[in-house]
Amino acid sequence: MRNTSSMSQNGQSKRRPITVTVRETIIDEARAYGLNTSRAAEAGIEAALKRAKEEAWLTENKAAIEAYNERIERSGTLIKPMWLVD
Image (tube, rainbow, N blue to C red; front, side, top):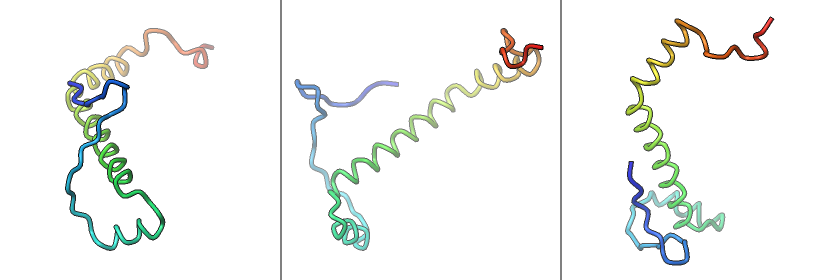
Protein backbone atom coordinates (compact mmCIF):
# COMPACT_ATOMS: atom_id res chain seq x y z
CA MET A 1 0.00 0.00 0.00
CA ARG A 2 1.55 3.29 -0.95
CA ASN A 3 1.19 6.62 0.77
CA THR A 4 -0.27 9.09 -1.70
CA SER A 5 -0.69 12.01 0.70
CA SER A 6 0.73 15.34 -0.33
CA MET A 7 2.55 17.22 2.41
CA SER A 8 3.88 20.75 2.34
CA GLN A 9 7.28 21.67 3.75
CA ASN A 10 5.82 22.48 7.19
CA GLY A 11 4.24 19.01 7.48
CA GLN A 12 0.68 20.14 6.79
CA SER A 13 -1.35 18.52 4.04
CA LYS A 14 -1.90 20.75 1.05
CA ARG A 15 -5.48 21.58 0.23
CA ARG A 16 -6.87 21.45 -3.29
CA PRO A 17 -10.19 22.96 -4.30
CA ILE A 18 -12.60 20.45 -5.86
CA THR A 19 -16.22 20.42 -6.89
CA VAL A 20 -18.61 18.02 -5.19
CA THR A 21 -22.34 17.57 -5.50
CA VAL A 22 -24.23 17.26 -2.23
CA ARG A 23 -27.95 17.13 -1.57
CA GLU A 24 -29.28 20.63 -0.98
CA THR A 25 -31.05 19.69 2.27
CA ILE A 26 -27.81 18.43 3.78
CA ILE A 27 -25.90 21.60 2.86
CA ASP A 28 -28.70 23.81 4.18
CA GLU A 29 -28.85 21.94 7.47
CA ALA A 30 -25.07 21.91 7.85
CA ARG A 31 -24.91 25.65 7.30
CA ALA A 32 -27.78 26.20 9.76
CA TYR A 33 -25.65 24.46 12.39
CA GLY A 34 -22.61 26.51 11.43
CA LEU A 35 -20.60 23.57 10.14
CA ASN A 36 -17.64 24.10 7.89
CA THR A 37 -18.88 22.04 4.95
CA SER A 38 -15.42 21.65 3.41
CA ARG A 39 -14.04 20.22 6.66
CA ALA A 40 -17.11 18.01 7.10
CA ALA A 41 -16.72 16.65 3.56
CA GLU A 42 -13.02 16.08 4.17
CA ALA A 43 -13.78 14.17 7.38
CA GLY A 44 -16.32 12.03 5.54
CA ILE A 45 -13.86 11.25 2.76
CA GLU A 46 -11.18 10.39 5.33
CA ALA A 47 -13.57 8.01 7.11
CA ALA A 48 -14.51 6.33 3.82
CA LEU A 49 -10.83 6.04 2.87
CA LYS A 50 -10.00 4.48 6.24
CA ARG A 51 -12.77 1.89 5.77
CA ALA A 52 -11.60 1.14 2.21
CA LYS A 53 -8.01 0.62 3.40
CA GLU A 54 -9.18 -1.65 6.24
CA GLU A 55 -11.29 -3.72 3.82
CA ALA A 56 -8.37 -3.96 1.37
CA TRP A 57 -6.03 -5.09 4.16
CA LEU A 58 -8.50 -7.75 5.30
CA THR A 59 -8.89 -8.99 1.72
CA GLU A 60 -5.12 -9.04 1.12
CA ASN A 61 -4.50 -10.91 4.38
CA LYS A 62 -7.54 -13.21 4.37
CA ALA A 63 -5.57 -16.39 3.74
CA ALA A 64 -3.05 -15.63 6.51
CA ILE A 65 -5.81 -14.76 8.99
CA GLU A 66 -7.68 -17.97 8.19
CA ALA A 67 -4.48 -20.05 8.50
CA TYR A 68 -3.71 -18.44 11.86
CA ASN A 69 -7.22 -19.04 13.17
CA GLU A 70 -7.09 -22.69 12.02
CA ARG A 71 -3.75 -23.18 13.76
CA ILE A 72 -5.10 -21.69 16.99
CA GLU A 73 -8.16 -23.95 16.81
CA ARG A 74 -6.01 -27.00 16.12
CA SER A 75 -3.06 -26.37 18.45
CA GLY A 76 -4.08 -23.55 20.77
CA THR A 77 -1.97 -20.50 21.47
CA LEU A 78 1.80 -20.80 21.75
CA ILE A 79 1.69 -19.45 25.30
CA LYS A 80 -1.28 -20.17 27.53
CA PRO A 81 -2.78 -16.90 28.83
CA MET A 82 -2.33 -16.39 32.60
CA TRP A 83 -6.10 -16.34 33.16
CA LEU A 84 -6.37 -19.87 31.70
CA VAL A 85 -3.59 -21.40 33.80
CA ASP A 86 -4.95 -23.75 36.49
